[in-house]
Length: 343
Image 1 (cartoon, rainbow, N blue to C red):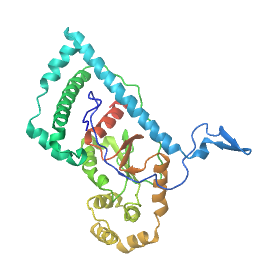
Image 2 (image 1 turned 90 degrees about the vertical axis):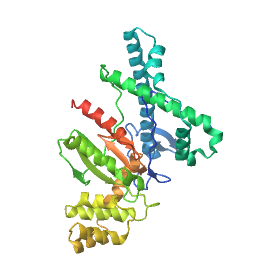
Image 3 (image 1 turned 120 degrees about the vertical axis):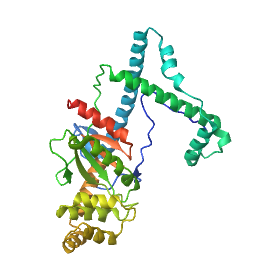
Image 4 (image 1 turned 30 degrees about the horizontal axis):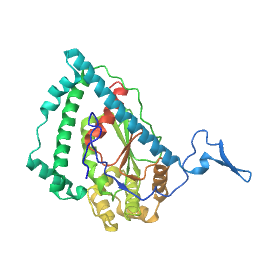
């Protein structure tokens, strides 16, 4: 088994945890791309255009992947240039600078560290420790080197004039019926596509709370439903119930209650409505009627059209961030957006 790190410069290793379906949610056809009326084929006198292919979601996913590849390469190029310029300023070679500021910070991993890492990753490695001990030790060494290099690059970048013109793809989203909170003057809008039964959606909630605390009124929040009904049978009705609570001004409180439990059932909704002081008969009538089923489905259809098939997913000023990402991943995008806004 080969254990290795790639992109050891600025890029960090992140496992994007997400609930996902086997395919995109069912719904309306994806919107046609620009210029899609140009015929791609003619069959028996009937034209086939790009709009007929129903691949907009896949194309948008590819666009995101292309950006990620470009951005990772750009960040590594920026890091290399900063180190090169610093070496020149000090009158040393790049090799000498990295030996002093990076490799000298690396210590040989102890047997205890190797064994602890192996225990954490045993389910992924699927081999006895003795078969992979050397590879794990090298991996831990590489991680130390990556982290030390990042510290160096971050310090150099903080004092350098670095302008990044590569802009991530931005996805437009319809917020006409979406719950909103925060100032409409906030420079950053976070749109969350989520599923109340998704464990990863629940796992990311503390991170979102940290963001609220850190950035305050610089952030505005919106919520879109993406219930993955094939694996979460109670998610659809929970989404409808939250909207019914929203009719009584308690959407965000209801949302918090749903993410605070791992056991969503029909009985939970009545108890939650009582806890929040809702008009329970009115709430139950709303839920039973399926009044918001079409709006919830419309959110799922919109997600499919954008190539989003797993939860949680976030649009930060239209920039897609998929999965239960760590705080740093959100901060990177938010800080970049604030910098663009001159803040």
